[in-house]
Image 1 (cartoon, rainbow, N blue to C red):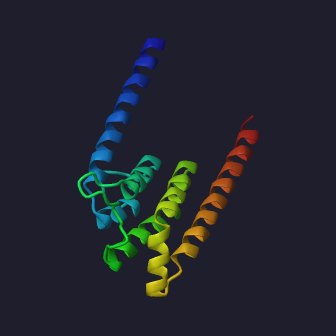
Image 2 (image 1 turned 180 degrees about the vertical axis):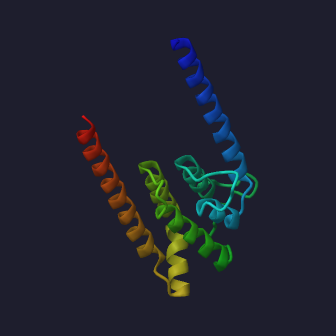
Length: 157
């Protein structure tokens, strides 16, 4: 009996790893518009989850080995930069945000601080403030969710 259960659990973890690999491959080929569609759950083949959100952020953080540039660089067109910033804001408002996701957004902000400041100055925007407010709201939401879970655990015991 236990071997059947453990066997199923083993197959489940293999399925989860295969699904994560498919998701990683799919996201690595996406452009900003496709990533936004994924975040907004408009791609029927893949449902949004924590791993997917983190993978999108990893793609935004990665440096292209051929060109030595980030996915969103300071020399990019304003429309691409705006789409990238809006994508990060969409990630922060998603219900599947985790601590890891928030840490990746903070890393994105640290690495892209010059881009955000330049874009805000040239386009009279306030994305830096929007990012900080969205991070605060995401943390507040995560704390509320954790508190609710604790209450449910107390009621369940």
